[in-house]
Length: 392
Image 1 (cartoon, helix red, strand yellow):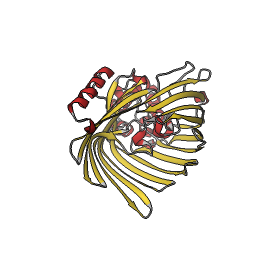
Image 2 (spheres, helix red, strand yellow):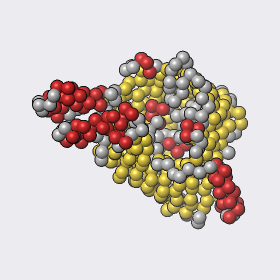
Image 3 (cartoon, rainbow, N blue to C red):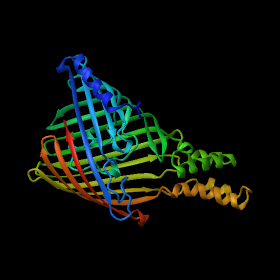
Image 4 (cartoon, rainbow, N blue to C red):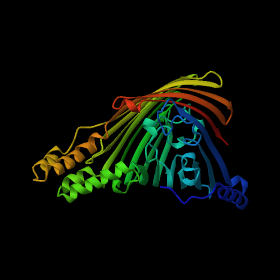
């Protein structure tokens, strides 16, 4: 999913060159950044942080350049450097927009998938009250789409509405391995008035994750284990467990109420990949807060659950009657069952946050998050963060 890396100096030079080539009113250069420091209590690890203060894990800097090619056609490119990747700069977005009519726009290229309420501004921390959007919902490996997207907007019966239809492919990373989604199709709809916003989305893709080539040792061992099942003659079971050209589905909905004095909202998502070892993931959050001048305190509850019964029991039972040595039977059966049970997860996060708007375009935020794990107590953790979000 990454483009070729280049230095920020080259980026700035290109931006200056572009502004000199075109009329000033034809090129728009905007940017944003998040400077985030986090530290956990004791020996906890949480969201990439540990008990040593870290200033790079969630920090980022980005520039967006857009230009009108004609009255109906425009080009947009966004480049972004993440602290977790040594601020190597990569193309996040690069697309053309064609305005078919005042209410209908066609986008082609790499753009943000309209998965969530805050998808279009996910990296722009200044646009919401959290330091980062709730991880249980928003931390997915397929935020961007290489393809086309058709957006329809309008107004009816006192409500603004927006419908997006997208088709293409994505690439991301899951368990240290490349996660590819081919023939990805998605439709989302949103309606809003002065105080309420309702949104829903459905997506479908053909998913492949090559665990055998994962950079994660455990995931690679799992992928090699599926190959061992196939080599032992259990081809159907190996194919059933692998995530290879399998159907994945994404379902989400949200509701938000905001009267400018206080707000309350919730968002829920479900991810399923059929006919694989992966379980069904379900996540949601509820958030509530109030505004007192420049201050915005808020409280957010998140919950994530990955669950599912052990599948392919009939195929697994064939291993025991295969005549293989007991050690091989135990290893192969354990692999087939363990690969599914290892995905079980059930935890919640409670976050108390505070935002202070320094000026238009800059905010300082602080939060404390407590994770409670119902499957593994060793995953319980407390995280404190401080951030500066800005746009320009």
